Image 1 (cartoon, rainbow, N blue to C red):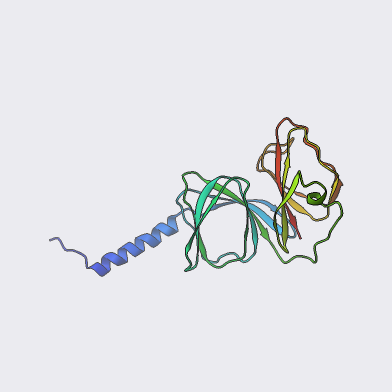
Image 2 (image 1 turned 90 degrees about the horizontal axis):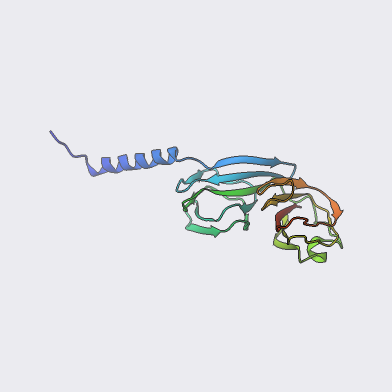
Length: 213
C-alpha cells in the first residue's frame, strides 16, 4: 500500500540531503608556495559551482592576487552575498573575518594567490630617497598600501631599462608572465637591494611585488 510522507518528514529529508551535499562538496585546493617569518603564501583553486565553506573564518589579514579572470560570490555569516568580478593580476585586501562561504560562479577553475600576514607590522615603515615609485613611476606603481603591506605593480616594455632604486623591505614577488628563468605564476622572496632593472626580452615583463612591513 502506498503511503505518503508528512510534509515535516519531507522537509527533514531535504535538509539532510542539503547538508550531505555540502559535506561532499569539494573544498578549495590549497598549494603552499612560501612560508616566511611575516607571511605564508599559497594558491587556492576554486572549482566551478563548488561552494567552499569556512566555518572558522580567517584569523589574519590577507592580500589576494587573482591569477585568473572570473566571478565569485562570498557570504560572511548572515550577511548579504557579495559578488566579486576580477581579471588576472587584480589585487585585493581582505581583512580577517569570521565564518564565510565562497563560490566560483564561472565555468572554469579560478586560482587566487593569498599572502596570509602572520602579525602586525614590526614598526614604522622605513623610507628611502631611492624609493622605486618615486624615482621610477613609469615602471613601478603603488596599487595598495596600508600599515601592513605596500603592493607594487611592475611593468617593463620589451628592451626597457629602469632607474636605479632601493628596496628596504622584504617582498613577495609574483611573476605574471615568463621572464628569463622565472615562469608565469612563479613566486619568490626578495630582500633589500639597490639596483637597476632591465628587460632584455622582446616581450613585456609584468610582476607584482608585495612589500611586508
